[in-house]
Length: 142
Figure 1 (cartoon, one colour):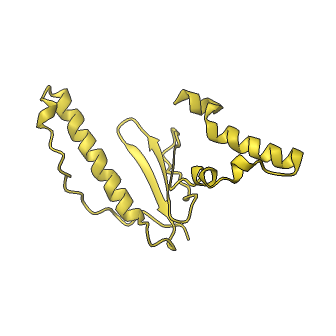
Figure 2 (tube, rainbow, N blue to C red; figure 1 turned 180 degrees about the vertical axis):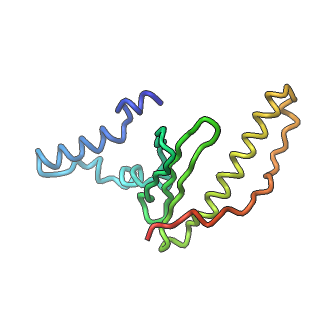
């Protein structure tokens, strides 16, 4: 993670090379016009840690029409999430995503508690815990 956090992730370097080629040579090299490169930058899930000591929730929108934005801020005893998606995308639902995320986190919590109690990991049930309805604080970006 430090590798990417320190600017050594490939996506930013590739985008910089593309823009430098456009600026200095007036054209974009073929590799950047390939379908695979355009798909490489279409993140259906755009997520990032927004660490802050303040008691605020910061969020951002999805980067593609049928995607999600999901920021998270780890705290001492909780993790705050902000989930967003576009109203216009029939494929996405911020509420469903948030409930699914919560269910996954509850399963991980159960596993960690059982492992800490020295129970065999073989006794862990992969069943999904009951997911309570979320308050209507999740929103879609218009």
